[in-house]
Amino acid sequence: MKTAGKLSIAFVAVFLVFFVVRSVASGGGDDRMLIEPVVHDPVLAEDNGVFYLYCTGENIACFSSRDLEHWRSEPPVFSAPPEWALRSIPGYEGHTWAPDIIYHDGAYHLFYSCSSFGRNTSAIGHAVREVLDPADTSHVWRDTGPVVRSTEGENNYNAIDPSVFIDDLGVPWMVFESFWGGIQLIRLTDDLTAQDTSFAMRTVARRSKGSAIEAPFLFKHGDYYYLFVSFDYCCRGLESNYNVVVGRSERIEGPYFDRNGREMATGGGTAVVSSDPDFVAIGHCAVYTFGKRDYFVAHGYSRTENGLSKLFLRELCWDDAGWPFLG
Image 1 (cartoon, one colour):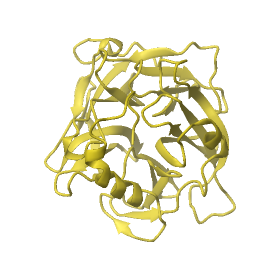
Image 2 (cartoon, rainbow, N blue to C red):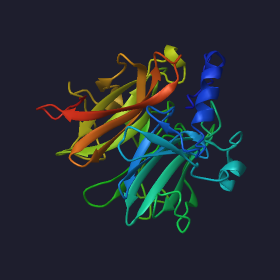
Image 3 (tube, one colour):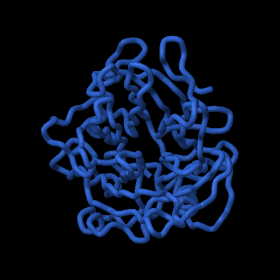
């Protein structure tokens, strides 16, 4: 589901697994109630007592839940792929990756990734809607087009995997990237529809050449901004070795340091999770506060279901030094 600079040699070996993931995560809206649904790159939002999960899938897959345990398959976000993406991203046909969603200024803002597989000809799009309930036909997703682009041969970054955060001063920021030159930070315009080019793009996390890094997520806890990223490789079923690490900074612009004081821009990162008794290669995470609890959401490859990519949702706790761990 993720592009990685070059086509994975293991792609053929896991084709059947991803055929199932792609089919189930397409968001059929068929009223199935699921526990640990088949998802990839999940993010969450809450509206009127209902949680909505968005993830990689045809036209962005969607599920809903009232308890974060039992999930109902909903229709996808878009009824058809965005026309601008079909025109400008070779090979993109609607299978849309790695969304992010935030509530800001009276509306929900959804960011999503369109890419040519194995290349960095990519773009992050934006859509907005005031109410998330798919049954509310008076409100629909309105696509505003691309926020940031990357082009093979022109950019040493890959415009996918967005995470958007509004800082304490009300300034919107986005981190994004998969492989290539590392995790990039940009500032957005106030309406969240474009890059604010008055702030120069900067690299806030990277690894040595040939080492995989992607799927950033920003979260504020106490006095620190936390940058979660995924190391190593997804998308290989039980052969995947994805894992999540984190660093923190008192400034959203960085630099971000791990527990040992190593800067994430030079390869640092404190381990959060890799595998557990039920899943291998847990990664592409997001973090939320609902009520008085923080939650960690990701996908993991099921040990008992031949590596299917399933929802991984746990409470996130904090130690006395302010570092996160899974409860």
